[in-house]
Image (tube, rainbow, N blue to C red; front, side):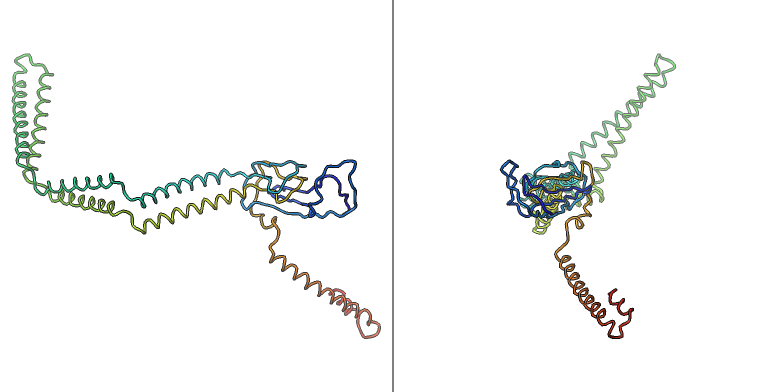
Amino acid sequence: MENRLTGTPRFNMQLPARAVLVLAGFLAPMLGCAPSDSRQLELPGIVETQEVRLSSKVGGRVQKVLVNEGDLVKAGQKLVQLETVEWDAKRAQLVAQQELFQAKLDLLCNGPLPEQIAAAKAALDMADARLQKLLSGWRIEELEMAKHQFEMWNAEADRALREYKRLELVQGINTISQSDLDAAKAAMLRSKSQADSSKKQLEMMSNGSRTEDISEARAAVAKSQADYDLIKRGAREEEIRQAKAQLAEVIARIRELDTQIAECLILAPDNCVVEVIGIRHGDMADARLQKLLSGWRIEELEMAKHQFEMWNAEADRALREYKRLELVQGINTISQSDLDAAKAA
């Protein structure tokens, strides 16, 4: 193609509907981008272009197209931005996990606070005191107090019962209302309930602690002792290594996610002028097209080159054989079918 090397060089950049960026740039950038004027030098020549296809490793919806047709863009300039809402939400979750694992690791490395050790010791002492109390039984003073409570409420219950029966007998003779009789009955029942409760309490204290209560108290002491020993000892080396591994895994996932988010921003690989834009806001970019739109690997190119050379050599050999048979057809016994077969080959 013959072209005049004048004015600003133009490059082709196409963004097809699936986030494909096609950019063609001059192989001779020294031509410059000088504006046209009356003293320009016009020379005939051939302008070579190179088509470069770009795509993102991740799929997504197009959020912004940051260039317009006719724009002059520089290498590394932002061209297309894909949406990152889902990626940002995942990253926020991972950052929260990172902070949680970091706090856990700091707690394991720094050990428990003095207040935590003191609280565990106090819980152990309380559990042990309850056990010792169950084993030794109630003090004489406590038994005397319980006995006094029972006698007091029992006497009150007897008094309330006698008062109720008296009011019940004279109700028909004197002016005793039904409400007075109901109040006396309620007082009688209340006193009787308190007397029964204090009697059960006195019997329990006199009989001593039950075997089940003692067993439960022993178990509580054992648990409190284990908790206290665990806090005093601090974290084991295996726990610290496990916490470090969990933290490192989350950090690696955040870095991987940052790479994917960066892939949502498509940049210009070279200086160029935007000629065609074939993508709009809201279009979907399909990450499955990456290989097709990003070119071929070196191994694939080498294999294609090898196949071309092989079939090119075979074509030369077949052509020479056909011409030889064509020349000797009139002299030797070469049939037309042999000649047709050589031509087909």
